[in-house]
Length: 454
Ligand code: GLC
Image 1 (cartoon, helix red, strand yellow):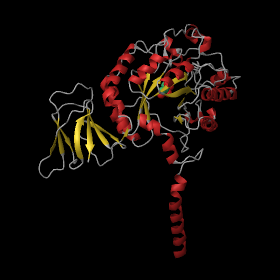
Image 2 (cartoon, helix red, strand yellow):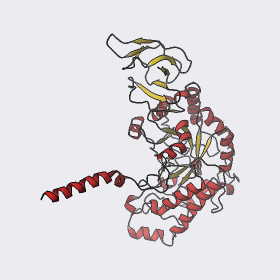
Image 3 (cartoon, protein in one colour):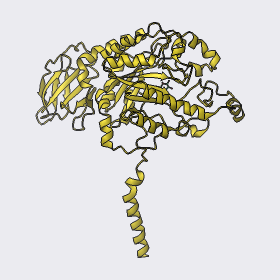
Image 4 (tube, protein in one colour):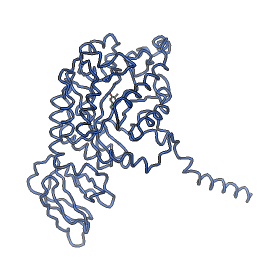
């Protein structure tokens, strides 16, 4: 009896020792966490990017999913191709606006779910060179943004609602209304998925070889749906794809929508989409980039009126950085190739704020737990300069308590104008510091106090 107990005990011990090994995720390559951190360095420093959703749907001007939402077939969608004429497209202008807003990288939809390519792919005729534009628009985007020193990202849709061999599934515009197996079989008869898979791999190869250094590849998206009329890593050939991507562009950053969660290195960052600032808490300390629209749609939507305010947009940016993540904010240019006037206004407002407050964003991350977050504020911290930034999300009182900050702060100033913010000590026996704030809110949407630490 005793020896059985001993054996059981030994088994338990061995299993518990093996636990970290067993719990470890599989790995596709052999990069260490340190190497990854190095590769991600520019991205964790830059924090703020621009997403651009532009395609034929910009002409419909009622959401980039219009083909699916209105269950159109290729023929019904054809007018958007025939009439695509972006005569005002000037990516230099786009790049200037992105730069002014403080965005350090930009990700353009080279192909969205509709299947239309903004680049001159040799594997399809469904591309910008065959429209009235007659040009490779991706090339012009790349040249213009690079010239402004903005890093280049390509969004590429794994999904394709135009390709003849793309198997119709639960997301497709032609999803059978009856949803019966017989209808799926009928609609998908004669399709050769391997042809689509090869097309997908070929196009990604084109994008990564024909345009010089690409910093980000943003692939979108998987919906395994228990493998019933969904699409998963096996359909895309995700492991092979990722290997090819890394071989072609060693330092590229890849998002997490290839359905490779079971691998430690199946993605470089996670992509919480259109979440509320509070929801970002759960991602604190991971590599995350929240993607957000100015309004409810990614593609240009003429009649959409629920645009986020300047305060809401800045809150998203500051919250992301305060949790150690990034924000990528989307613009949906019109079919003529111009930024929507509402987006221009929003970008201008961000530009104004960033001009004199960007130091609390770039190079910043989560503050360590030693610094308590004062009420109604968000903290960011720059490890290099050791500056702590207190963002005043609400401007109500004339004093701000820094709880248990006694002995930690040398000097305090507003970031936008470097005007002193006077510090008092709390009551006897308290470890708090108290900042005296001006009666009138400074002329900044969200004022930032810079704390120079001891
Ligand atoms: C979603 C949508 C898509 C958009 C993307 C951006 O997956 O399908 O329209 O491009 O999110 O994150």
